Image (cartoon, rainbow, N blue to C red):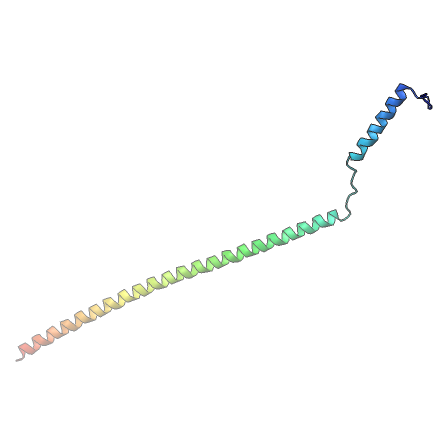
Length: 117
């Protein structure tokens, strides 16, 4: 069979190379068009993250304040119990002194009564 197109060996090699390039070009990733809302979505995500961060900070601050209040109440309760203990010691001492004085008065009264008889 005779070659009707009259192509040479070099022409066939170049055609093969072009066909191979076209086939490989199909598999190359196409350059993607940038999404016009990409910047808006990024800004929205950043705003959401900032809002969440602020909520966490507010929650931590509230927890910290609550912890300080509880600690202050504990300290106040401890101080009150110490004051109550001190007051109880004072009252006990007063009662002991009053009992000793009453006993001394009773002795003096007995001595006077024995002398006067």
